[in-house]
Image 1 (tube, rainbow, N blue to C red):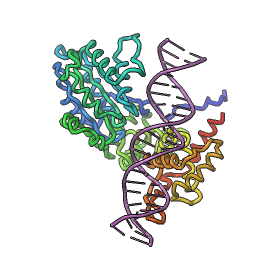
Image 2: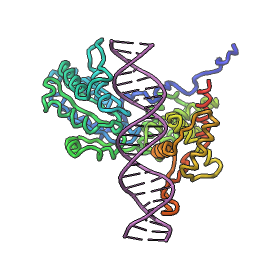
Image 3: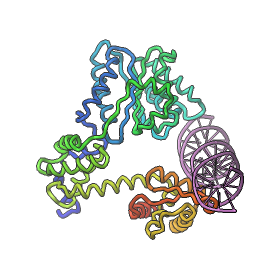
Length: 399
DNA sequence: CATCCACTGGAAGATATGGCGA
DNA sequence: TCGCCATATCTTCCAGTGGATG
């Protein structure tokens, strides 16, 4: 009695996992068209024919991964039942920051028989890895679908997308059939592909549009029903979350994050129901959380440079050019007891990265013969968030 | 119109860190 | 434990870049 946790009850949540990122709904709402396109791209698989190669384009949180998982699961159960269909194997791989070699290597490792040694990390060429991959495919036979998520992050995506679909035509494999599914957040990724690859993939592109507020509302209603107890949310709160997410990003992930965070806030305040206000507060919290994660992903010196810009912003000395930022950076590094980088170029590189990642604003200035050309940087966020995260990480390091 | 400033992106070289087999 | 290799990060070097200037 009277224990610290004894008053904690789940007043609002019925099944919180339904609102977590990992949750996989067994029914996909508002993506009928995309599912249809997908379906027709893969119907050949059911008759033991070569699968198509498919490229998916669309922003984050519009259902690319969820739809892929759903469609392939359905395809899997259907092929299991049909005589004419070969065995189906699905290989998923997230290409974040990979080279072609490491991507192929993880694919090989996924195929190797139980207990055998994994493919070596070094010493062998990409061609060796591919060869091994093909021989494993032939050993297993059947139809293999290779899902390459975030393929725009893959260095040699072009080569891989050229190589894999032609494996059978080039006699690298005889028994197995292979289809590639590429998923990209980035519409411009397409232009990075060679004409040949673009041509080969042209027929099978599915682009996912962002969700509008109505679609988001339908999705949120469905999730809320499963995740929250009956009287604990208002329709207007759902509508608000849908409207906010629809306007911001059109992403289901953001909408669901808002609902979850809103429910958490309501629960923390011992209120029985999720209302509009909670969604408003959730919006701030979600935004802040995203930013924090992004900052935490940065390397030490990138963070110090960012903090230097935040400091300059704080005292009203932005926009600033790299030399000024470097002075502040030295002070920040000293405060955090870190050895500062010595060259201006390093700072400039970090600034450039931070700009690309959307932390900073940049303006090109050119004063000709007298001043030369240079960049001026400005902070593109709330400096307090930066200080908060940096203080936190610094405290962790000290332990 | 050539010049020149202050910087740029890119590449190559240098250094640190970590995994892995021997 | 050692050397080998990969990877990430930092430094050094280089050939532009674009607009004010003489």
